[in-house]
Image (cartoon, rainbow, N blue to C red; front, side, top):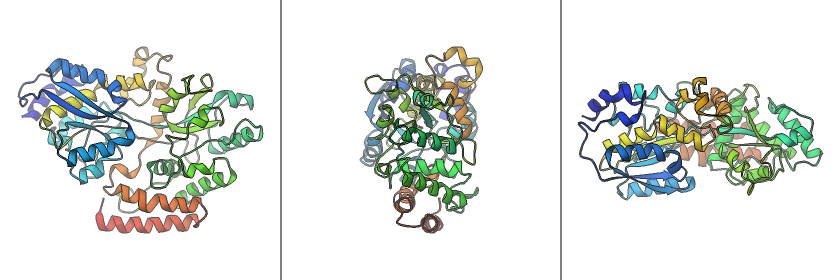
Length: 434
């Protein structure tokens, strides 16, 4: 029934406005839908959700949490049988949540043809990060968070540079010069925590920049211990030992270390896009007039970034799952993407056409300074293996990042550590599958 309803509206829904939906053939309306939400998403998706409320008279209740608390709130609420209709699902969670039976696939509510029609408006890579290895889709993409390369333009000019570095060799040389001149304590401050997502994000960037991959194309074998993988960890260890990054990087999260960049104590910062807004806040930043952004410098590849973000998924405890799916579609419409772009200064929108030249007037550069940069960086965007490995936490916490940490600390040879991790991961793959 719901599929027939969607087929009638699909042609106009995403071309014109989700406001064209009609409630024909839908189940009885609930009074309210509950969302376990990332705190910032009330702002980003608020107008799209309000359209839904206005059209159908269904209250949307936001249960807001910071990112670090979401996983526990989601899993404990669903395990306890709480009536949750939608929840924010990171693109690194859905494989595990699906294995636990804690999310309903969109395939329960849409035909493949309907999903294909809706998905056409999104960046291809964002649709990919909401799908599992078997092809089921767990949410529409709502945000395309990316790791970006920020730099202190004033510091670089003081060193005689008028352009940001295009390669890691150039970036590391500028870092040395900034430190030698007493302008900086180090080049940048990464987050390389063991048993933490930051470590996976960083290795993904280094692995891909060196031309490597996590697995073979058919996902039958782990290959992160390739020559590219060894070179990636070796470079990380070299810059750690040289002091271009602090040893505290092994103990800090990307969410806790960016304050040094805001204080003007380092020329570069490689972090999520929220850094930009913080750098423009004079109460928090000493580099308000100096913050700038550029493509991630290249190594073997010209550039690369890893994507985070995610979308809103239907909970198995929803008492009105069809309406929850419809609300999710509203939130991930063009209106929702515009809300994300407004909050992220032009970055992280998932509707690709909004980055095309014909929309330039809608997004003036002074209000959306990251829009053009984000479009360019998305041409070099990729994913971690979190979106298709159902035992990803085990892989991250107990197999991979501990091995990298041993190598970075000098407790084990880099190649030996990666080979050991590969063997353990391969045994797990052969025992559990994806």
